[in-house]
Image (tube, rainbow, N blue to C red; front, side):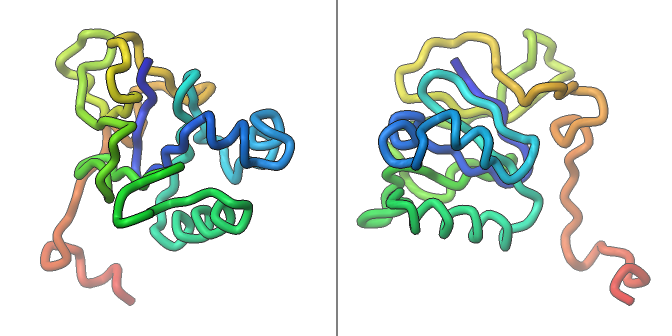
Length: 151
């Protein structure tokens, strides 16, 4: 299976959640900081719009006992950017862009466990491609940002 990646996502091994999160998977789902959770049997993903929120979430998980990086390699979780992929090397997860439902006009970013089977992409409850960050994502270099937005 594969899971949708949008904006800046934290992808976590489900086995780490089961063994390290107080109360396991059910508690993790209940404590999830927003409505972007999607998961398969191997991976869970929570998405964020702000690097500050990503850092806060990672620190929260590290305080519980999760390991983000060891020797600059992702251990229990990894940050994944919708456009650029993995923020750190990983031997357990892979990233790519794929056509949703085989439709070349619906490109999405996704992660799956290494050697996972190519199956439909799992998305958060209620997610639809139309109007999603996958459909509308755009990057504006700083020099092209409308200066009136800066106050």
